[in-house]
Length: 347
Image (cartoon, rainbow, N blue to C red; front, side, top):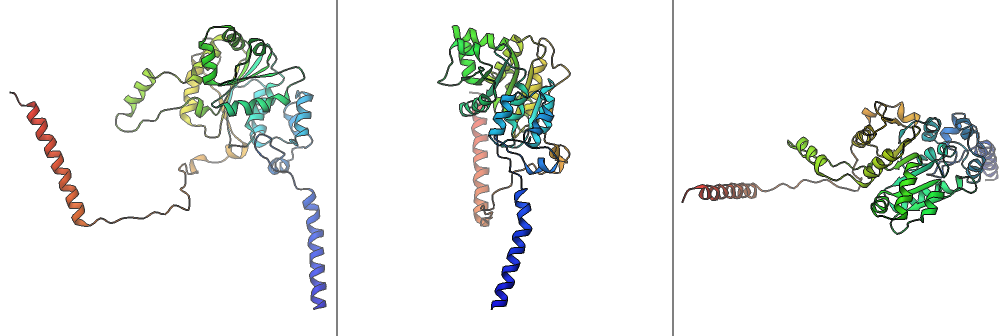
C-alpha cells in the first residue's frame, strides 16, 4: 500500500509540473462587446497589451486605449481585425458576425478619430435597450469633454445636448417621431443629420425588414407591397440623413448576426438613391471574420435543426375515416358548385 501511495504521489506531482506552464500562458476568452483577447487571435501572433489594436489603428486615441486596457480588452477579435482598418480608411461596410463577436467595437473604435460635435456618429438601433447599450459602450471611449446623447421612447435630449454631442444613439421610431414634430428639438436633429460623419445601422435585418411572399403570385405581391407599403422608420431616417448630409466622407456601416441577401439588396437600393451618388456602383462590401470568409458557405446547412427533445411520430388513420373525410370534402365541393350555379342562373 505504501508503495502504491508513493507512486500515485509522484505521478500527481509530475502532472502538476507539466500543466503549470500551460496554465500560466493560457489566454483569456472573448466575451461579447467587452471582448477580451481571444485564443485564436493570440495564436495568430497578435501582440497583447493594446498592441493588436495599435497595429490596426495607429491613430487610436489614448483615452480609448486606456479604457480598453482597463477592461482587459487587449487583442482584436476576428471581426474587429477584419473591419477596423477598412472603416478607419473611410469604407462603408456590412459587418456579418455572430452575436458577442465584438461588432460594436469594430465600428466604434475607427470612428473615434473622425467624430466631434461638428462631425457626428449616428447609431441607429431597433430597440431602446440596444440604443442604451451602444451609448454605454461608446461613452468611455470618447475623449474628455465629448458626450453621447440618447434619443429613444421616453428620452428626448434638449437641443443644446444634441448639438454638443459627438455620438447620437437612437431608435428609428423615436427619431422619426421627433423629426415629424415641429420645434427646437426637430431643428437640432436636422442640423445633427447635416453634420454626420458615420451612420451605423445595428441589427440591420430588424431595421430594414423584408416581407417574404411565396407561391405563384409571389412576385406580384412583392411588387405591390413595395409600391403601397410605407417604408420602415429606419429606411426613412437613412434616406433623410443622406439627403441632408452633403459631406463626401459620409460612411454607412451596418451590422448583423443574421445578414440576409434581401436586407443587403434593400440597403443598396436606399444608398443608390443618394442625390450625390456617393454609393452608386460602389455598395458597401460584406466583411466577415477571416475564418468564415475562407470557408464554403454553400456547404453549411441553412435550416435550423430542431431540438433533440422534440419527438417525431406518425398517426395512421383508419381507412374508413379517410374515406368518410374524402366523401365529406367532395360533398362540400358539390354543394358549393350548386350554389354558384343557382346564383348565376337567370330569373
